Length: 254
Image (tube, rainbow, N blue to C red; front, side, top):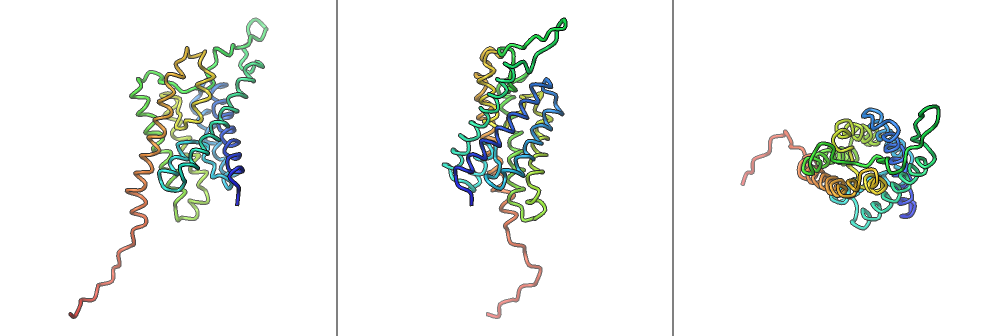
């Protein structure tokens, strides 16, 4: 049995890995859709099979609150997980900041390496793109709804094969939502992943990353709530409903 501190430490580490490799890939590839999607998905695989047995490898407040809405966590547990996840994401983004300062994103001009200014780096921050706030909010709600619903379903499955490989299916779901979402909003579906990059990218975005940040908090939490509601009303109830017997009932002789 793992202690609360061990679980929170695992969430810090796991979210650090997710942000460092996921957002880091977006930074060095210019947000290439396939590469970035795979980086986020593979980060989930790595986390699920290392810290998964410790904390469940949520790495995402939307997942933790999805578990809360679904009755699997207390509010206090969801909040403590969220704080740990934000800390992990901050550490991951801080590493990106240090690497930028060390010339990670330097370009070669005239045979000399010209370092990119920190004020020109987005750090993988989410944004509205060509959408207005309503469109970006809708995208984040839908993407998170699908992602969290997959998590709730595979982790409650009675099928041993499904539950054993839950981490793999969750990673595929995250990759899937990134494939469509990167060009729309940068794909948050994760407030912890969005907050530190938005702060560090304030200069590069002229403050837009902070002004738009609320969408990448409200959207995922709303999508998480709807996923838990959908799961409770349709999937859980159907799954737990006793099968009808085909045997003819005996008529009462009274």
